[in-house]
Length: 459
Image 1 (tube, rainbow, N blue to C red):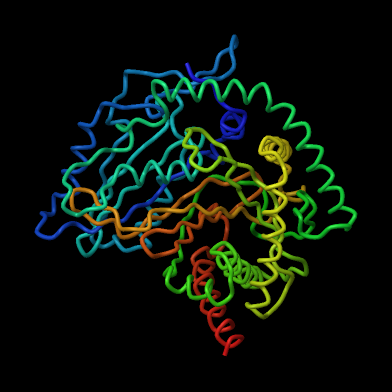
Image 2: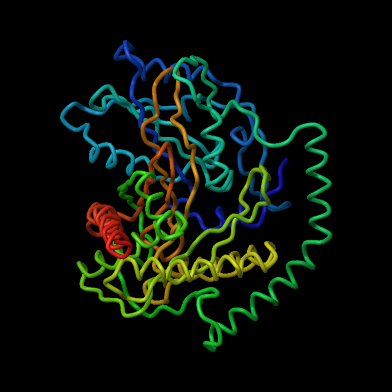
């Protein structure tokens, strides 16, 4: 039996048919040279045979009247309920068709009567390519951990013919390391409440100073946006997926010239793209866009499972037509937010996340999200991925796209993911959000505009 953290439990409490709480990845591969057309089908058969399932992939959630919800390990796992094979038809196998198909796979909840993960092998893509769509419940782990687990099950060499599916790997401590982690958890329980109490007091003071305008951009206030936009409202079932991507070489060129971070640049592009998208929908915001931004609360080197994140609200740039000015404004805002996070106990950020998330979830449950102000205009997270290309039995992974879940009152969620020299923007939305593909196009256009603005400023 394994205990759930409050954050992990929150994903189950918040989950509905309209708003499932699983996350996924879409991995696109190129078959190795001289391989046969049956390569993907053979990989699927190997996956079916890999039935030695390790934690947390052998865990089922247990709800009872006599105990708190907890994980229970099961030995009865039917691999046909977790591993699937599909072939796209030749007349509908382009990128849009793939994204549409993956959107349908991403829509339904995972069955709670069995371990909460699936892997879909998708064959029939042009140019000898195939894809893997793999999803798992967010209560298993946060995005950073999932990305690490995924990278660990692939090779860095095209000559390595071994393959170790993610569900067959050991995750978490064993033996002496497990005992050490248990002692650390016990100590955390003893000391955590004091840090939590003091941290909440400090955070409440910061929010108060922000509300009376004695500070600026320390942290944006939740539930204060009165602007009605197509990005927020009651979350409904049905999903659509789109992506944008730019090379890290182009990102790094801007970073060097402006002394900015990847986050500064990516959020600058998203800010410009979102404003242009909203203008298409007849919405002209006069105030900064507010995003919800997950922050990693793990210490450096910590590799525990489960979720250890906080979510805070961050204001982007006031309205401006100059991308370079937008970059500077966002850099200023994020530096102040980072200072705030570093000066508040992680336990306080975690409590703040739970409290604000609970308020938003109550509104969602009571179907008030179309009437109440949302926590923010959208959620944007950044998950670092492998820097080099990965392989499975000689097949090179060419693209790695994140597909997240939707928080209460948000019809759009954006995840940044860096992989093998590219920065990908994964956009997941309800199917009621109009023209998601256009928003993805606007991201790449906003990046080109930022490049030009930076060149002109440094000419």
